[in-house]
Length: 323
Image 1 (cartoon, rainbow, N blue to C red):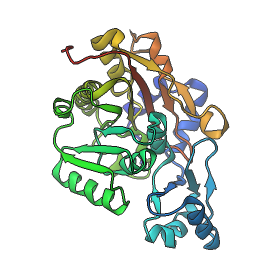
Image 2: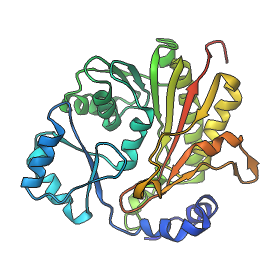
Image 3: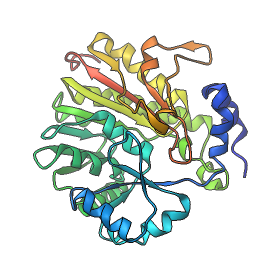
Image 4: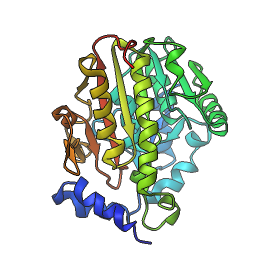
């Protein structure tokens, strides 16, 4: 099945011209399976040793700490392995793993995961802050909330506090209370499109992009309000649409002014992953964005990576009086 024609036309204006053919090819190709070791339940070296004994063909991802992949043909061996059955391995695309790593929470910090379900990044954040830290995980939709709770429990993430409710208003409970905030926003999921799977594109439309943007702006605004002055926020999506990426960040920059600042994303600068990372757009459809948007990052898809967007924001001073 072909990709939606209008999506391809937009992609031609988003992706650098010299990278377009390679990006389009990824929608047709089998994808490697990314995973990380669940260090809350088992030592990483021990788990990797068991995978080696079971002849699971994994490799470490250069400059993405804790990330591993198996080729598409090795996925079955990974899912049949003892570490996977025991919950010691968590399947998660490498692009997805980079958002919590960009947030870079320290041991003992309080982290807010504002759009937490199904809990992949929540579990990763839990391991990063350790038993002395705390992760508040917010999810609005009831079935997804219970999936989040079950997933967090299965990962042994005892320092996670799940909360069911609207992430856009959670900050009112704890304004400017978190050291780090992750807003991995719901989006049009263009980074997960597969040409051979019509279900991945069935609900895509320009209208959906506009609907997603409205939600994303509210969530990012709320995330900034929940963040302590001096804290760090990461905004991420798995879509290419500039309306859901740079335009959302540009909107909050206009709202909050000098109280926030886009800083370097802290993503890999060498190796095959770094080769897939390009600066954020500074204009879209003749609409200019602030030059600082070039500090945000787009992850171009490959046989290892999903298309992804990451923006890292530092909070310089209080914002609670800003409407």
